[in-house]
Each structure stands twice: as C-alpha cells, then as structure tokens.
Image (cartoon, rainbow, N blue to C red):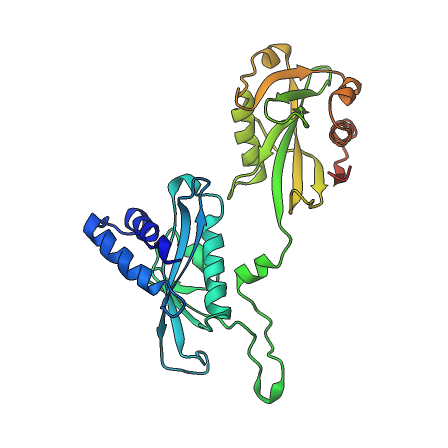
Length: 321
C-alpha cells in the first residue's frame, strides 16, 4: 500500500511526534516510506479507512535483521514504529485491531520473532496485553508463530499464548445496560425511539462504552436519555442474552437494573434527547404488548416479574424470534 504513505506520515506527524513535521519533511518521509511499503521492502502497515476514505487508524512496523539464535531462528526482528488513531475515531478498538493484524502478519508471514517498540506510559498497558514487557522506553516481546517443540519431540510443558491471541479465540459479544423504571403504580415507563421503527419502545439504556463498568454506564445513559440521575446501590433485575445473527455477527448481553418508581412530577420533568427519543409514556404492563415486538414484551414482562418477586430473571432467547 505505498499509496497510503503520505497519510501514514501525516498521522505520525500530527499524533505521534512531539514536534510536527514541516511540509518538506512530510514529503521526504512519505517518499521514503512508499519505497519501503512494497513486497520486498522492510515496512509493513495495516490501516482502517474512515467512511470518507481518509485514514482513521494505522499500525506501522519496520523489519530488520538480527543475529540468529534459538529464539530468533530466522534472524528477523521488527520495530513497531507507530500505532495511531485519528481523535474522532478513538475508543472504537481501531488501535488494537491494526496492531493485532500487524503483529500476526509479521509473526506468521514474515517469520519475525523479536518485537520492539517505544511508547508512552499511558499506552504501555495495551502493549503488555499483547505480551510486551519492559518499561515504555523500550518494550520487547519474543513471539513464535508455532509453539516450540521440546527436545526429543516432546510437547512443551507450557501452553501459554499471548493475551491478545487468546482473546481473539473467544466469542465476540456486545454489552448493554437498561434501567427499568415505573410510576408509583408500578406501570412501566418506556421511551419512544426516533431512529428504530422496528423497536419503537424500550427502556432507558444503551451500549456500554469501552472501559465502563455496568452501573457507570447506567448512570451515563440515564442522564443522557432522561436527564435523571440514577441512584444506587445497583440492583440487578435481569440478564438477557442474544445469540449472533447474520446481520449481527456477535452475541449481546444486557444487564437490566431497577431504576425505582418515579412520581408524576418526575415523569413530567424528564428531559429527552431529541436525537434519540421523542416521547416518554407510562402504561399498564398488558397495554405494552400491542406496541412492541413479542421478544421485547417478553423481556419487559420478565423484568416486571423479577422486581415483583425479588427473583432475578434470566432470558436467553433474545433475538431468536
């Protein structure tokens, strides 16, 4: 991808270097990198494009020779030169994705076993998850594409794999939180969506952000969607699991918490986010059945019963219908 060289250098200049490069240096570095981003060159880069076609994230590695040794049988090492994401695309896992792809390519395709990098104290935990060790000034990792075989053909005692490699083998899932709120007569409150006609009514809630804890996500979603402040301690009413589907190749896990009972004045005072909801309505449970898909009413009924009985609900058929 020599054609990406200019955008890669621009990203490095703006978000990696302490002093941005001048226009002349950006051109010089881009020309040099383009010549190295070829099959017989020593540079390898993996990128994620934004919806506009611009560069959203990139990981760049430079391969160099070292003296061969049992740990480096091919005599190859690589320096992770940069991992960067444009600010507007951060907290989406892009940096982790491009770094993971780069390391896998270098280990499996290029037969690199020694990896080095310089990083910041803030970014060091990410690299430690991949198996790097040392201080941020110089972190190193030895990684083999295939497990080493002990002398005599015996299998090694350890089955350790790099943390990210193990994580990649696990099923993917997205986590959501919901807050079950009623009026003082125990009639469920639901919000009307402006963007999802197939799922018009639902509880306060949404997807968890990277690094959030479930109750923290509840507090944030409640404030954003209704203007209310969720008050703990957290009380879990239900766990709702959904299998992967063709249009959504990952599982979903919803945690539904009890948001308590609101007075009529509190309900009238709700402040809705107009980009997401245009109405908050309170109805007896039975009347909600005609206003939402069967699976969503089944969830609502299970959550209502959990609050009434004090026994947490477990629903594992979300999305099956």
